Length: 94
Image 1: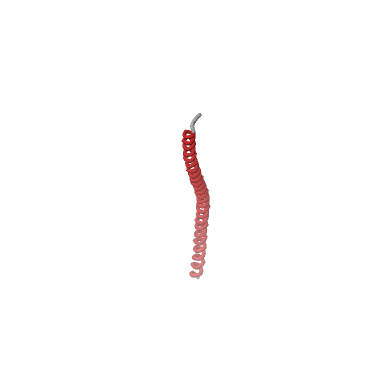
Image 2 (image 1 turned 120 degrees about the horizontal axis):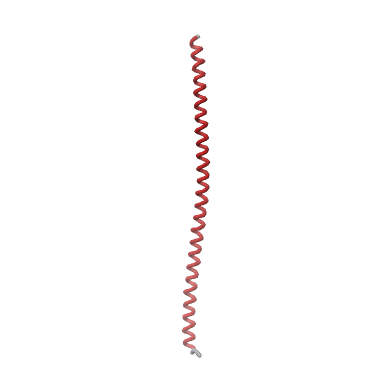
C-alpha cells in the first residue's frame, strides 16, 4: 500500500495537470471565440460585398438608361432646332 507522502505527491501532480488542462481549455475557448468572430466578420464583409455589387449593377443600369435618354433628348432638340431654323428661314424670305 502506498504511503501518505506518495499519495500526496500524486495528488499534487494531478492538481498541476488539471490546472494546466484548465488553462489549455480556456485558451482553446478564447481561440474559438476569436475564430468565430473572424468568421462572422468575414460573413458580414461578404454580404456587404454582395450588396455593393448589386448596388453598382443598378447604378450602371441607371447610367445606361440616362445616357440613352440623353441621346434621345439631343436628337429631339436637334430636330426641333432644324424645324425652327426652317420656319425662320421661310419667314425671313417673305
